[in-house]
Length: 327
Image 1: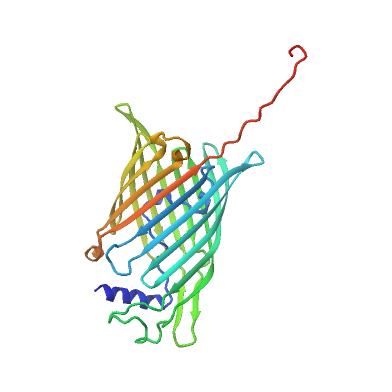
Image 2 (image 1 turned 90 degrees about the vertical axis):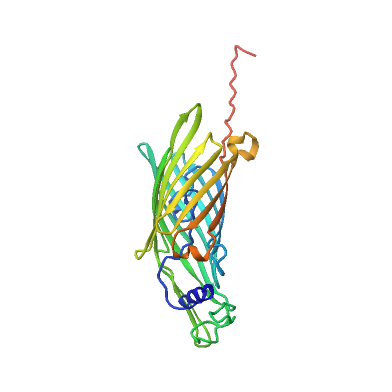
């Protein structure tokens, strides 16, 4: 059964496709930049995030994804806040590999009690299929079907995304779209085989709220959020709530409608009072239990997150004055 499903994915990859293709993450509240360029610089700090995900563990050819995002925001000319960010995503599922690298630029404008930002991202997207894929019969080449590449095939195309992001101290809302130009990745080979892969335009909606309260003299932060991804054909919705205790640890639950139930946990090093750069580190983990028909064929998904944020503080200039009355 596993080999049959892998073979189906291989066959689909060689025809023009237009379906949800962006990698899936569970800790989306820590991964806003990768889908919304308007988020770049929102914290006015240098922030870096690494996420590594293995989906459908135990399933042959299961998806594995690694992500690195970096962003920084700064106010220039005393009133203009701008941000810049870089995201690199490496994704692999069976014989299909992709690499997406994109640069985000944003502008932030204060509106009453909040800030509205707009952003654009420019990048490249590479898609390829390996030549040693496995068929349902166990062979390691595509000799059974001349339309399937027998050697590695792939191409690189331009990538474009846009976004809007509104945020206040305790809430945020974002709207964005990736792969705006819907590029067609095509690699015509010398033989009859050809790889043609159309990037579908994706749409994202995200929102979250942080509510702080005290219980028994201890601080609790309740952080509900939702994350919606769609491509105008299908839609996926994540509903999440995290609870943070005493600025130290958090735990949470995500329900991905008709797909998975997830447990989340994390540690904020600032609550340990170690001092120095340790206070800028957060680590998190998420485990997804699949509730769809695929649950029979996998052992769930696991995802690790590492985040570091450093706020540059401008040293105040010490000014001296002299007075003839004092020496």
